[in-house]
Length: 339
Image (tube, rainbow, N blue to C red; front, side, top):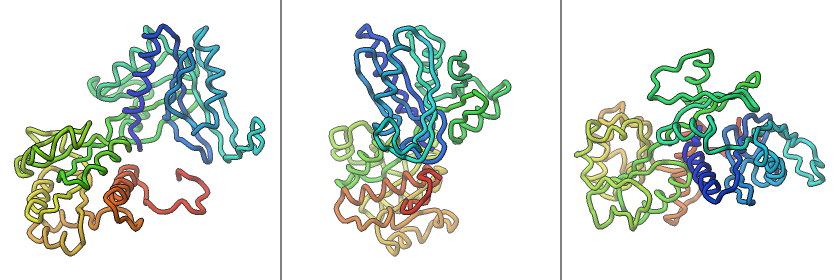
C-alpha cells in the first residue's frame, strides 16, 4: 500500500499557507470505496476559503462539488460524510458512469483543533488516526507511544502494518506510514530519471556512489547522497538501509558485485540488478545461493523500453508493483482496478 505520508505532508503544508493568508481551510479524504474509483481510501485533498485547492480524491469528477460543500464547513466549522454513487450514468448530467461508490469525509480544520494537533504530531515519522465519523474527537498513535492500546488496537496495528484504511460502523482508522526507501547503487546518467520518477512515486530515494562529482544535489535533487563505497555501509551507521528496496546499476561489474555482497548483509526488502541475466548470474556466482534467488534481473517490466527514460519507467513501474503487492500486468478486461 502507498504510505500517503508525503501526501499528508503536502496537504498540511498548503493548509498552513492558507492559515498564514488568514483564510479557513478544509481537508477531504476518501474513506471507503466500493467497486471502481479513481483513488483508494486515504486519498487527500485540501481546500481553502479563497479558492485554493491542492490534491485530488477523484481525478476531477467530484472536486467541484466537494469544494462547494466545504465552503459552508469552512465558514461555520464541522464535518460531513458524503456518499457518492459513481454508478449512475447521468450523475449530475455529466455521464460519469464510473461503476463505483465512494465515501468522502470533508472537515474544516482549525490551527488549534485536536485533529490538527494529532496530524502535526504524526507528520514527522508517521502515525495512525482513529476517528468516529463525521465529527468525533480523533485519537492518535505513533510508534513512539509503544504498543497500541484500547478497543481499536487491532485495527491500528493492521493499518500501520500495511492494511488499507478501515471504515467500520462509523469508525475510521487510517495510517500515514513512512514511505518505502529506495537505494540506487550507481550515479550514472540513466540513474537520474529513475531517482526522479521514484520520488514522484512516493519513494524516499538514496543514491549510493563514491564519486562526489556524480553523486550530488545538482544531478540528483531531493535525495539522500551516500558518497562511499558499498562495502563501507553498515546497519550500525545506516539503520535506514534495512528493509530498503535496491536498484543496482553501477555499470561496473566489480562494483556491482561488491554492492550485492554488501546488500546481502543489509537485510533488504527487495533487490533488482540492471543488465542481462547472464551478466547478473556471473556477478552473483560467489554469493549465497539463497540470496541469489532474491535478486531480480533483468530489471524492470517488459514494456519494450529503449531510452534511459523508458528504462526508468520500466524500473519504477516494477518497484511500484512490488511495493504494493501487485502483479504488474495489464488492467485490460479487469472488472475492478484495485483488486
